[in-house]
Image (tube, rainbow, N blue to C red; front, side, top):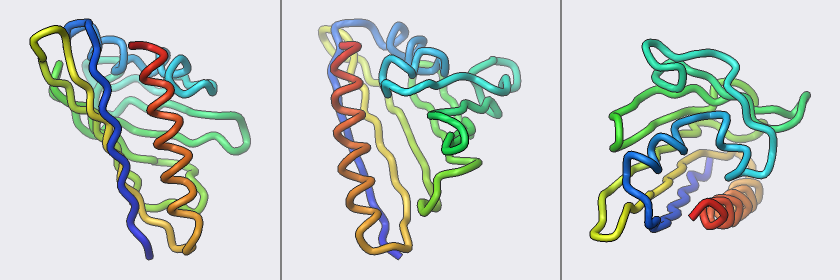
Length: 138
């Protein structure tokens, strides 16, 4: 089994609070990923908080991700909870940091793939997609 890791960093001229509010809202993520993303289950206390679920992509290949941890204006953790094909142990984390001119967002994803070539290919596709998507909203 091959573990993969993706780290994408983007600096924004917007405050952490604004970037956190935008990226924590599942319904805004279509702008980042370029595929349909919608919240399908509200979280506990906050509709986009812990326990919230988003659907990404087109049926029947859509993937569901569940938010498993949130520290407001600091971090969001999520995991694939349905779908994902040959990927296992998928975990994503967004970390928000204040800078002198705005904010820095680091998006880290780790996952395993039991198929030798699939992991590196998915890693590259996801990294390019995240990099381009975050640049679109910068």
